[in-house]
Image (tube, rainbow, N blue to C red; front, side):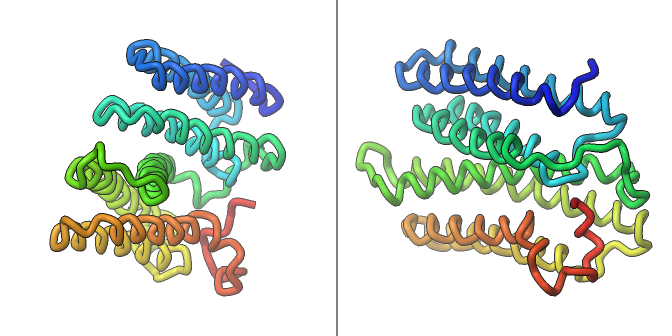
Length: 264
């Protein structure tokens, strides 16, 4: 299926309508309908990603706009996973809202989507590295949304153990995928630049982010009742993650020095 970037708005509109309808169904406790609508939206959105992949003759992962496509896809996917496990009705609304934000950014500030792919990005390790990272970013994003929601609207209807279990499991899974992503990235770096790790600014912030979530896990294991400080840690870790993802492009230390500032 060949598609162009100009058709993105149509795929995105259909997907968002389905995700919003799924969120509404979740609030009405219509679980089957909520899951069905959300999955349908995911399939439509993924069809565009696949179509772009075929049209570009490469994975749509080169520019920030292309990685935002994956993040927009993985956010509702993470939301439906959380809803299936813990039945939080509001998670569909939050994950859909965040997906819409990234979709709007792509609509208002599209990136260059050409077939050109620099040699360093032609490694077979590049695609799994970025895709795995985008999925773990989505899991961490949902965990952060849950933390903010519970900090702003604490509830006595859900026990500390239940709230902590949801956050912990998301971080466990997210950190596992992040670790795999770092390993894929190391293999990619070895093939592209001849070394697994060089303390490039991007790699340094990736390590900082990894340790931030690892610190959260250790804090939770040693202080299981201190949930509010742990939620704050999740928010701080997610800020560090944003620095690793796109903030690094604006740091003076990365200008002309980082091998990862190739997305523009």
